[in-house]
Length: 150
Image (cartoon, rainbow, N blue to C red; front, side):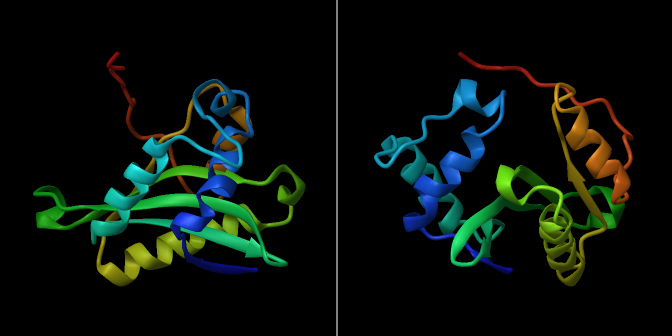
């Protein structure tokens, strides 16, 4: 297993991973030809030094992904925090430790950058994900709220 920064060529595989769960299936558009909006978003992420999309490869195939964002802040004495989003592991790779290794990779990057907090959100409709994050040390400490724009 190797971890690396994603490239635009990886986007169709990443979008397939994002769509491969009940919630993602309702909001993503996977396929060999994906909408240009994914490329626009990826280009913005790639240009931003505080953002990266990480992929995990197993036998040359993308088996996991996440987005890691560093957020400057005034709290915690002006330190940065790391936000982990869009975590997905291929169904065929679940239960093999890849997810934990992927999260640990992100935590190590945050630690190396001097972050004081690593945070993430997960939908309550994903109880397996909630258990997974708690098992590796994340604790529910705040109530997340979203306001969806149409």
